[in-house]
Image (tube, rainbow, N blue to C red; front, side, top):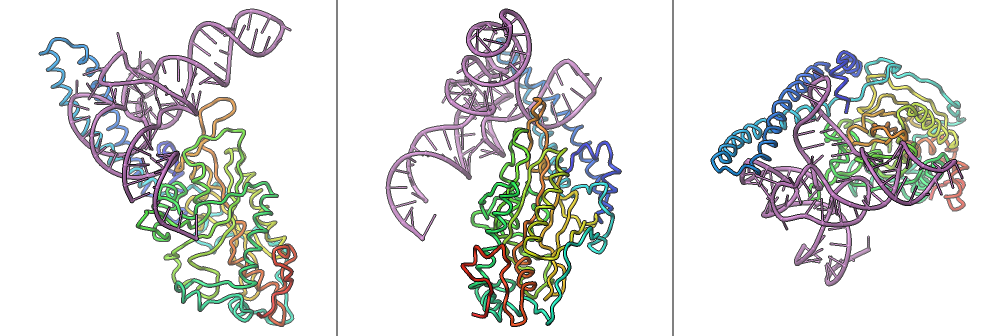
Length: 424
RNA sequence: GGAGGGAUGGCCGAGUGGCUUAAGGCGCCUGUCUUGAAAACAGGUGUGGGGCAACCCACCGGGGGUUCGAAUCCCUCUCCCUCCGCCA
């Protein structure tokens, strides 16, 4: 949610930002119109309420029956008018809310302008894509051959885009999760175990509802939603709270499965485990003072990079252009690792500063130590990392000519003595 | 799933239709006093919105209703507590 003052004071800034995000800027005029209507109506109804309040007090003290009855009659008419005006305020506010709720965050001034992912900028590349003296296989061939990845049975159990990891494959993913969480704890994050189902209010707070409803799984019986990312319950953790300045920054890390209907991506990336309806992710999340949030963003990016680096994967950092930014993000860096079997760079992390956009929707503030009014804080989120694509990269980069996979050094403590995954 | 009891400011807690402008206490801030602190005393201490301002409006778990007027009465939902049932 954007600050309404931006529309009142600098509407052209908002229009420009929306153009850069490939959105129609006319919505700004609608917001301004509704805001003016709201204030005009509010002024009228509040004056009437003030009158009713003071006359109602007089009625309590009025002894003369005729005078008393006259005042009651007058206030009954005022009351009817108030009811009508309250209703129109409610309607105006409802429309203003739902209009504002569709408007994405403003990109920071330094974000490169572009229409789509094609204008994203590679900022740096670390490590060199591994070369092989044989033709590296894609994971969708490697996994089934080793008996650690089973597409057919995933489809049998649930349907398309579901798969089964078994044996060393399942264990390798669990090793990655445990290792990543421990790494983030060392980097200064607090581990959280969270609900995987949330209520609609929580999804609204983090920005998934109402706009991305079609991409979510919804349980009608209990009116609960499956989380599409740990960012949702991590935002919900402190929604509606006023934190103390000395608590900040609050850094969290959490493992959750993520559930996405991927309706908008139907037909894309159908091979392998790159894009499924259910996937695991280790998330990082930071609540920060506004003046510190850009430093925290750099820290989070460095922490995500360390995750790739310690796994021995070649990766690159990509700055998203205005047209490719997510809904709540003011700035985003993607981390991509090289997968030699698929022959592509895979997005394993997306590190964003949402500035006060989420905090305003979620009502998350902090009380300054100087005793001033509570202020909105900034929230940041980043994957550290998404599991399926990390698993792809590990399998494809560590494969050997005989089809076996060497287990990266850092994961071995969790692999029960298995250093090389061979056919089962 | 069943029966009963609850939800009031940062915390505790009073309040059954109009002197409530939410009592009182704790905590916190400021001042007086003090070498300093404590104690005592005095004053101040919620959030959001409207208005150039004076000031006004809303909020007592959420939503709806009755009334000139609701923390208070009615309906409904949510959550918490006690007990019973079921259960990994």
